[in-house]
Length: 533
Image (tube, rainbow, N blue to C red):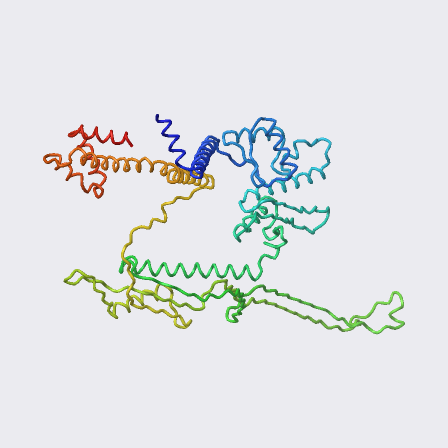
């Protein structure tokens, strides 16, 4: 009987509604099956990304040979999280790497005994380049990296010593860029890995040919950036010092300080040499004494008599002479005059001028009504705060420094309830997809209920209300037939039955139930009327 009623109601639904109901039911069941299959799958983890096609084929063959399931998404290979370590160990055992660059594994297949030193040095540079490329590729914004290192060979008996250099070419991911800090980090990484390689010797450019860092790194842009950073740090430090000092007296949040500093970035070297003539010091002293004595005798005249033999000269015949003596003294004294050499270097960041602006909140007192009343601070108190601020920042009038302290009322908004915009935690892409699937499932369930099941339930309610109307109409007709011209209790029942069209459904049901219980003969007459027609 119930099955026949179901068929009747399905026929009454019409072909369009029945088709919509069937399609919704099938779609709902399919969605349920799809979601259960999705939830039944194990979570996938990234194995490799951004690989050469040749290496990708080797990796996929290796995974298939070890019966490891995988998925390909936008050039990335995913494997189940439970098999990630097994997949990596299996691929490493097969000698399959994630890229075409070779690292220190280049020495695994080389014969050290039959290899010359030149080949060994070249392989060492190649291995170092490969290892650096892999390390740089771990940065999230870098898809691929290539490193070229030049290690100059020092010639024998050559005094010239060339420094090594390196060049790095980066291929960025889509819509990704490197910050200045990341570029500097790559330069320091390469310079630290290569012996005697300076940071300035590392050049970096991207796949579009844009130079990110060069050998002449200290250009105008970098100097300007460093100067700006130095200025911001200096201004922030002075502002915090002022606020920290005044908040001890005024309270937290009652003072706000801003500092503008004009710094001098000129590097000047001054050298002066001063001589002191009064500070003579004997450095060296030399003394030379020269004494000379000579005797000049006068010889007699020469003649025949003196030449004759055996002739004795008469006494006094010899000539008269003279004696001479000379003394010479030389003394040399060298003095060292004292001198002072002074070298003064004025570094970067000297303060040329300071401008300080400080805003201090007033005082608040409560009146008789309990309301807060704002009042300005006394000028003497503000002058004390100004002197404190000048002492903190190192105020100098000759530089043209400006310190302005004002007393203004702060805006203090009433505490508002926390917004509900932060209820949603940060979700990963996988969690968002599952959340969307659950929401889609709920949407289909609501559509199926409102457009499929609910219209199917409405006819039963309408039939029940229609049955009540027929019952009351039959009861009213039966009462007129059975009680025509009669008076008594039936007349009262007839009066109660009048106006049943305007009764609420609950009262109408209660009246029908009461009629069936108290007047079964009249209920029987109603059934007979239904059966007749």
